[in-house]
Length: 201
Image (tube, rainbow, N blue to C red):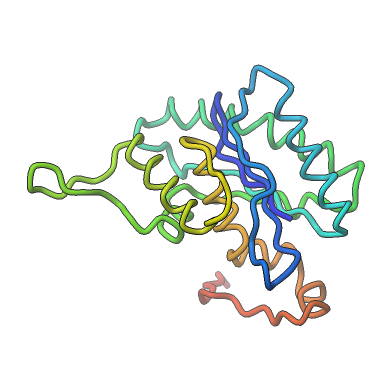
C-alpha cells in the first residue's frame, strides 16, 4: 500500500495499492487536500485502514525539494512547513498500527521522481523548445499519471503529482529497502538495487 503526498497548503494525496500482480498498481484514492481542514488526518487514516484491511505494509512517500526549489530559500521553508503536518500525522499513526513504521515514511526529491515518471520536460513554443513552468509540470504530471492509471480518474494539479509519486514509490529502491529483503523474498521478489551505491569509508 502506498501513500504519495505532494505537499503544499493545497496538497495532493494518492493512495495506491499493488496487492495482485495481475492487476498491477491501482489508485484507491486521489484528491487535493487543504491543510486548513481535517482532510489530512482522514486521508492518513484511510491509508492505514486499507493497509490493515489488506494485510499490507504501508509506504508513505512525501515530496522534498532539495536545496530551495526554483524560488529559493523562502519557497523551501514554506514547502517544508506544509510537509510537516503530514509527517507529524504519519509519525503519530505509527504508534497505533503495525502497517506503518517510521522506516516506511520516506522522502522523494521532486527532481528525482519527475525524472523517472514524467517523460516530458518542456514543449515547443513559437518554434523554440521551452522548459515547463510550474503549471506546465502539473499538466505533464496529469498526462503521466493518466498513462500509468488508464482506468482511474486522476484529478489535476497536485493530486496528479501525488499519483506520480505513488508510481515512483512503487519502483524505488528506498521503498524496497524499507520493506526489507525478507518481506520481499516471502513474496517471491529478489531485491536488487537499480543503481550502484557509493559508500564513504
